Structure formats: C-alpha cells, structure tokens
Image (cartoon, rainbow, N blue to C red; front, side, top):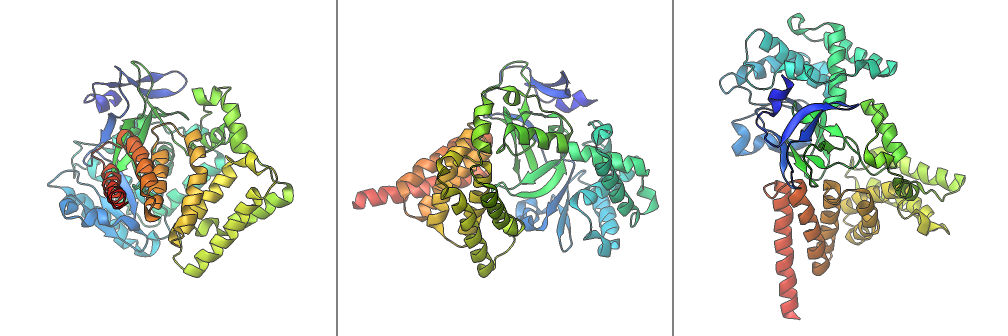
Length: 453
C-alpha cells in the first residue's frame, strides 16, 4: 500500500489532493529546517551516476556498501539491498552490461536505469533477491500519465525500448508496452541528483519523495547527500497544508515555468504563485527585453555559439575566446540606453551565470565577483528565502570576496549562505560543514588583519 511508505513519519500523511491526485500533507505544524522525508541508501531504489563522482565508492567508509561497474562514460553504482545477497544483483547486472560493452555507450542514463529496473524485476519475481525494501512494485505505485504524453515522446520511448531488446536476454525482457510505461513513470517521477555545487551528476528514483507535488513557491526542497535524498522544509507548514517542492528551475517567468511544467511533467500549474496578480510585476522585470531585433540576434548568436561548451573544456584558449564573446554579448545589454530596465532580465542573468563559470575557470576572480554581485538582487527577487540556489549564490560571492582579501564582506556574505543552508540542508550536511569551515577561517584572517591595523 502507498500509505505504508509513510508509517514511520508522524508529521506527514499521503492523501488525495484536489485536482492533483496523491500528495503529502502535514498532520501537524512543522517548522522550517526539518526533515520531511529521508530516503536512506537501503531504501533508495536505483541510481545512475556519472563518472565524475567516482569518489562516492572510493571512500573507505562506503566501500563495504557499494559495488561498481565503470565504462567510458558512466559509473553505475549498485546499492546494498540485502547484505548477504547483494552479489547476486551486482553480478547479474554486470553480466548484462559487460556483454553489451559495444552498445552501452550509445545509451542514455535513463535507458541504463530501465535496464536495471528490469533486472531487478526478474530477480525479485524468481525470489533470487529479497523484496524487504523498495521493490519493482514501488515504481508501479506512481502515476505514469501515459495518456498525456505527446505522440513524439511516446515514439521516443518506443525507440529506446527497442534498443533494450538488442542486448537484453529474453528471460528479463518485458512486453514492449510495459517498458514504455516504465519510461513514462521515470519521466515524471525521477529525480536529477546534484552535488553540493548544484551540478547534475545523475538520475534516480526515490519511492517516498516521488509523491511530493510541485509548487513554484515551494515550502520544501529536495537536497542530496551522496546518493541519499532529503526532503526538508524551508518555511513553516501549517496542519493539513500540502508539502511541495519545485520540479523545475525557478529563475523564469510564470509563462515559461508553466510551459516547461506542461511539456516535461504534463500538467498546467495552478499554484498560488502562478495565480498571484502581483507576480505579473516580477514577470515584467524578468522578461524585460530592451534590445532591438539586430541586437537581440547578435547577443543570442554569441551566447549560443558557446552554450554547450561551457564547463566542458579546460583549454585556456577556448575559455578565453568564450569569455571574450560572452563579454561582448553582455555589453550589448549594458551599453543600451535603457540598460537599467533589464537589470533582472532572464537572458542577461543567463549570460552572467555563464561568464561567472568561465571567469572562475580562468581565475579572473575580480570579474567573477563583479558579475556575481551584480546578479544577487535578482536571485533574492526570484527564490524563496531559504532556497538552496540562493544560498549557493551567497556562498560563491563570499568565496570570491575571500580570494580577493575582502575578508569583512566575505564573512558577512558567507554567514547569509550558512543561515540558508542550515535550513535547506541541515547542520549535519557536508555543504553546511564546508561553508562553516570557510566562515571560521575567514573570520580568523579578518581578526588578524584588524589586530595588525
């Protein structure tokens, strides 16, 4: 039963939400900064992680819990399901993937994830592994919304299902339509896993967390510690109030958020923020485009020229060229006679974000700090008070200030970040500890400098 997922939690309940289906409500008042749902590793279902976080399985304390398979592009981590039988699932999956060595690099993470789900279904159905924790049936408890997917997306799922038939042994194969159903369910219930720098590092399915509904002004957030998901409250929640997270990036206008949610998650968002008339004022600031058609084309061409290369190269010449072109694109906004009107423009913020990344790669600390500082007001305008993205922005600005020996400003900014992260991640999270250590270090330098003066 779905409700059995939440028997361990005394402060929340799974129930029917009007016009939404299943959702989670608070059974009593919950203050900001508390755990709502926590999927531990042994409850955690299946995950595909990219190669850039191999350290997760090399830490001594975690070696006993994980086994890995590594190919050129993907690190597949098998979680500890049953202490005595983990080798069975791992060996079975290894054989599947090793046999398809020439094919596997062509597949997306989602296809690999579906492969593992099918493998687990087979082993569970033949009582080869235990069903004590999360099982294949947990996935079937979630909604698929298959009838809402576009013909094009279903055809794409069908194509990926056909790919699986090229290498999977017949004993674990499922009906073509059932495989498509798995793709549908993962599409609307899976989570993109991010590291402490909010960079995407993988994709996974967490049974409990998948019942959280969306809001563009969420009272909860999903954060990660290694491959463990934590749903935490970022504002006070009243009794019987729905608990929600955001499925998408919030740095967007109402129209663009609604469009993305409809395309990716198949529903028309009618949250309070989307229906708030006051949001039109913020939308006008975010959408403000002062550029004439020629300027817009020039700016977009410069940006799109390098968009897919950002964070993908360490070549200094390439980075310098990207920096030069994106500075030109930003100058088109800044040199306009109405530049003040586009301070919060989404397009301008996207340029600034990319330029910050490149500036950091090139160790242009001063420029990175200028860009970060110039955009902080927009982040404060868009994100909830204790949202992780805002905390990360303060953290970045604080670090850059510290690199530039502006210790006093660094301490003030890092403290703002720490206050947010204490709520969004908790004081036991590695991100909190990392920022707190930096605050202590910066405060020490600041005190020394004051005593010298």
